Structure formats: structure tokens, C-alpha cells
Image 1 (tube, rainbow over the protein chains, first blue to last red):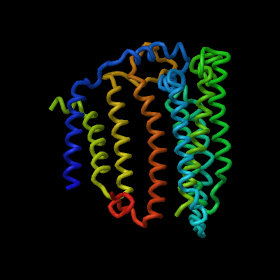
Image 2 (cartoon, one colour):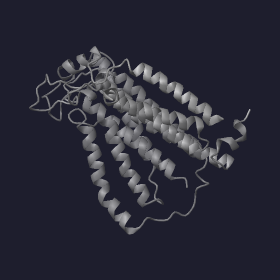
Image 3 (tube, chains in turn yellow, blue):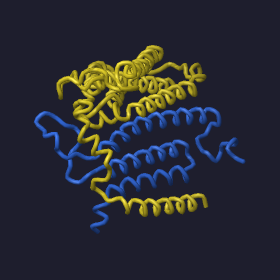
Image 4 (cartoon, rainbow over the protein chains, first blue to last red):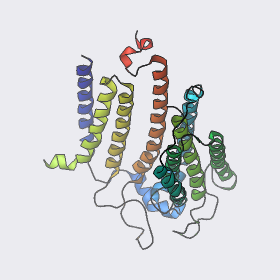
Length: 226
Length: 119
């Protein structure tokens, strides 16, 4: 009965989708906002990656809110699992020699790759969120190799908080020296150079560290259980 | 037939959304419901990116030796999906943590057997 009802609802929603999407032509130019970003983004922000200039500059406030949501999710996860910390106090098996050696070798390179991705967010595909996720995957590998030595949640929290503060501080400096909150107040520099595009690299490094620490903390929280 | 080929990505994204919706509605295992949420998420991402695509254009990333007037696709949905993916991961992680708590409390992941949910 339930399944039939669910199927009926899904079919109704599907029909709605078809009706709406049939009106949206595939593969055609639709919005003017995008054209403004594409035509002026390079001049206005100095970032070669237009997606980055949209995320960090044009919709920077939105990104701040989104980082806050992620922060709340991480806090919520820690709070939900907190009281069980003593329950899962069992002997943990170490991983095999191959896993331990391999992860020890790979870990610095994974961190380096993550840092590369978030530092070059304004030039190449990637950015703070992607780089942060790569860094967290490095920590996941470490957790798998050494389940007993779950690294300090506190250290992650410190990095996370400082990075979040740096993000907001850059925004407030934008009010003082620039046009408004999160506005650019540094010179745009040479196009396609690593140190260019004003505050975008600074913000993306902050986001990268914050997301990396948050995800690593989340993984640690979930790994702490059985 | 041509219609289907033109709207293939819409069908893919919409199909994923519908599968996720069905899983959320009809499944009784909490983990499967959370998987359904993940499907919903992914379907939305595919749909948004497909809507932002413009035929014959390249990725919105300029580089040296590339004319600044090169036509590129709509960057806005890509930026939105970039943030939505991260949010999705946070939401799924939180949901899984809640599922762990629920399992500890009720000893089961079957939503039909959770007494507090009956009215």
C-alpha cells in the first residue's frame, strides 16, 4: 500500500518535472547574469576561473553562509555523537603493514595536492571546498591505518575556528578599505599569476583549511564509533 | 527519438531525483533512506549543471593563450552545485550520525519498529 502510494507520488512529481523541463531548452543561452559574469569577471576580479569569481566575489556572502551551514553540521555531528565517547572505548586493531606504510608514504602528497588545489583555485579547476575535501581524505587514510591514534579533535577545531575568523576578517577589511563586505581591497596583480586576483586566494586558503579541518573532524567523529 | 537525445541529461538528473524520492518514501531501513537523500542530492546537481550547459561552449576557466572572448557555459549553476555538494556531504554525515544514535536507542534501523514514531 505504502509503496503504491509512494510510486503514485513519484509519478506525479515526474510528470511535473517533464512539464516544467520541456519549457527549458537544453544547451541554449538563457540568462543575462551569466553573460555579465563571463564578459566582465576577468576584468573585475582578475580570477581566470569564472566559477571561483562567482563563488568568492559575486556571491561571497552566500559562500560565507554556506560555510556556516557546514560548521553547524560538523558541530551537530559532534554533539550527537559526543555522549557515546566512552561507550566505544574498545581495543582497536591496527591495519596491516601494507596499509600503514602506504598511507605514511601517500599522506604528505595528498596534503600537498589538496593545498595545491585550494591555492590555485582562482586559476585552475578547483578551490577551497575541493582542496579541503582532498585534505580530509588524507586524514581519512591516516584514521584507517591507525585507528587507535585518533588525532586531536581540538587541533582541528582550532584550525577551523581560525580559518573561519580569517574569512570574516577579510570581509570586514573589505568594508574598511574596499567597497563593502568581502569586497576586494588588494591590487589585482598580473593576470594568470599565482599572486593575483586580490583577496580571492586568501579567502580560498581560509576556506580550504576550514573545510579540510571540518571534514577531517567529521571523519574522526564517525570513526570514533564502531 | 531526437527529443530524448536532446533532453538526455534532464532525464538522467530527473530520474535520479525520482529514484531518490521513491527511496525516501518507500524504504523502511534508515540507511537506505539516507542513501535516497544522497540520490536526490546528486540528481539535483546533474539537473542544475545540465540546465547551465550551452551547446558548443567550453568550461568557464580562462588561461594563457585563450582569447578572452571565447564562449563559455553558464558559471552560476556550477558555482551553486559546488557549494551544494559540500552542503550535501555535511547533511549526509549528520544524518548518518543521527542514524547511529537511533540504532543505539532502538536497537534497529527499521523505521516501522521505532515506537516513538507511531501516532
